[in-house]
Length: 227
Image (cartoon, rainbow, N blue to C red; front, side, top):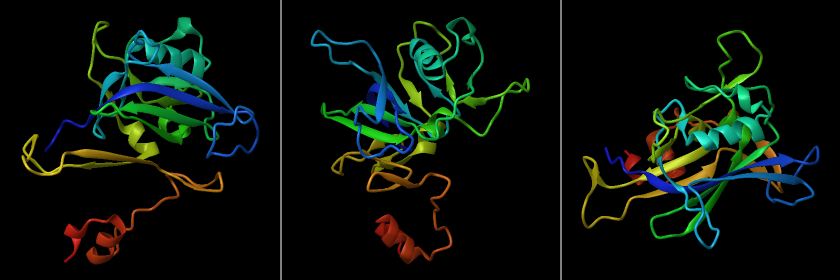
């Protein structure tokens, strides 16, 4: 299988709602307070350099630099810096992110910068709770085993919980087939908005597995599924 699904992840921003019912199609400072974390340092022009990131739905946790996770731990989860866990996967928190958004900023192979805005709850929480019985939920994040690890890093299962990801490539083994269209990725938030109001999230959206192949081919824009 083609395995080189990577981009530069430049920043992750938590959008904190400032009002009870914010509009999810804008970043109006009267409605949203951004908490931005840049990744990979900055250039001389003060633009983020980013980190090389792999998209892997088979990874239980997203693997990010420890310094980034420590900022998430304190600035987003409101935990004490001294209590940051030094070993083991997952980060614990007691916050409700159901009205928050998260904004990902990527740079592709030709230098274009793209943003993806999704619901924060699925990215920052999980169905699992701490094993010791303490309150809260577990967020699917972990740091590399080595402090000096320069990547690549991983956006894992929790990224796929909050976004729809299409990975498209004509490949032979782990390499693209020469003369075919270049591999590409498409992202979309796993939710439905109408006039800035959130109508449905990941748990309300359904994949119609029972539809006949011809109808699935039309809905998915994949003619190869047609009988």
